[in-house]
Length: 334
Image 1 (cartoon, helix red, strand yellow):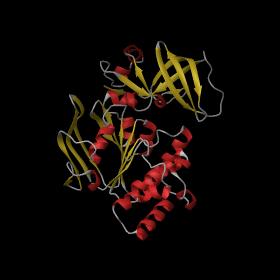
Image 2 (spheres, one colour):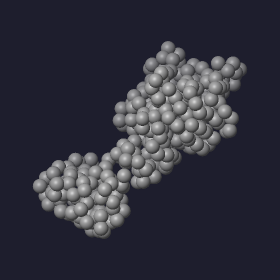
Image 3 (tube, rainbow, N blue to C red):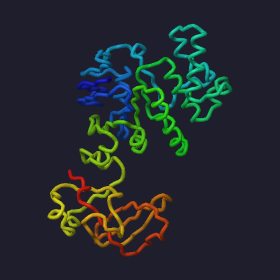
Image 4 (tube, rainbow, N blue to C red):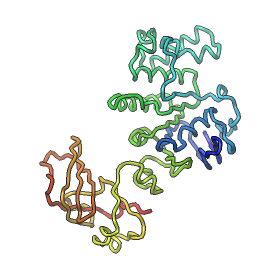
């Protein structure tokens, strides 16, 4: 549906985007993920028309929209700050785009009421000023305003970043449910890896104006194609050459000792016979999260962090001697 072909964007002498190529399918929840300043928001703004590329093209359904005016692109936008009109009522905010299109009053009212029900805003809330609503309610208003004009695409630029942690998780679930309900092609920008992994059908990981990897959440997490992606997504252990040699991984696991090697925390096991690589270790510290426990271990000079499911049994304490095991197939090499 959406195709970016060799997009390049400059801000003065600064190259913000280089050779961006993407295909986003109709109905897909597609996330741009990366650290601040990596180019994800610039790419989003290029799609919506706020940024013009110096080269390359943007097309929707095989129609080139690179130079099309913003208001003619039929793309809904939810900004990080929501960009709502605080002195207007919720109703007036949602109706704004319809009034710009000069639709009949009766049609506007029907569409606003229908959209309010879909995003679970009550009649009482429709009559309130936006400034009287909570952060989560304001987000629903912003989404309703973006969707009420029936766009073919909706773009969301870090819409959860202003919410507290608990509300962010709640609204994340609601966002995904709304996207399923409407079936609308959604482009989502975030620096939050957990958001990206839980929400997305596919993810593009950005770094310094280029795309490092595009794939499903499980592909990006379990089979990171570059060292940057491997380190940026989730938590990971870097394995020293000395540790690899001591455990004979090069011989028994087919690992290239000349490459940088990494393994995810949950791929290591404490005092369990899972995997054919075994090493003695000493517990240095632990963090208790309820559902799981994160241990920091010293495996004869190799620091390893391990996530273990909380089984209800006593914790390993600092200074305890344990054995760790893992399968070298889970090692990522770069």
